[in-house]
Image (cartoon, rainbow, N blue to C red; front, side, top):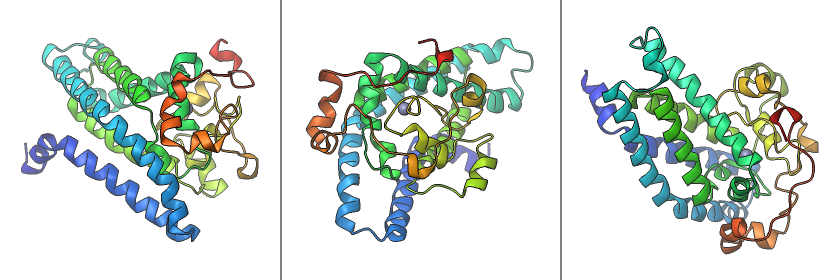
Length: 281
Ligand SMILES: [Zn+2]
């Protein structure tokens, strides 16, 4: 291995953290400059999201260890779907196919978070943001973090995903997740072209609309093809999009750290509307 490859392999997690924090901060500053919003207003929303992220951070770090252990174990034992398929040692299988399957795993995780009431209680904390900007990316309840990374561990074991593809995926996912929460949409035409394959800010904004069935659409993480394939793809113009969750519109709740953290444990009302029929509800 070259020195460069060695360095990436040894410091993969640290590089991910720097990339994540750097891109998030950079785009947040760009949003602030472009919108010409007073700093206090912009920081007010971000501060709550940063506090929620710090609460979830220990869960994220501990669970990441499990992902590392799972990927090392499948590599040593040649365990998982990739190893029973022909050509398991080719880079196409190890990287491309594994990447696509991990993305499908993320789609499945996301559908489950919306479909099952106890999962939704935790995931709705992310959706409860009534203004979406790049800082919304890190607004995730520790309970949601626990379930998300548990799904990832399960998919690593099922697929047989090695550390290399996980690093590649995390890098692409960082860019995709942060940009899809951008305050600004892409020009319609560009989004329509990119949206054939990728989740764009335009598509992810629809997912943050406050009412079903739009909340239950565009579940994709990096690729939008799963939504097209499973009938959960939707478009909604900017002017018709209202961020948040219709059952949690009280800003005394959605803008208070204590209240937001307690959302999963309070009495819940079901959102109006239905999941798409083909999701089986
Ligand atoms: Zn969601």
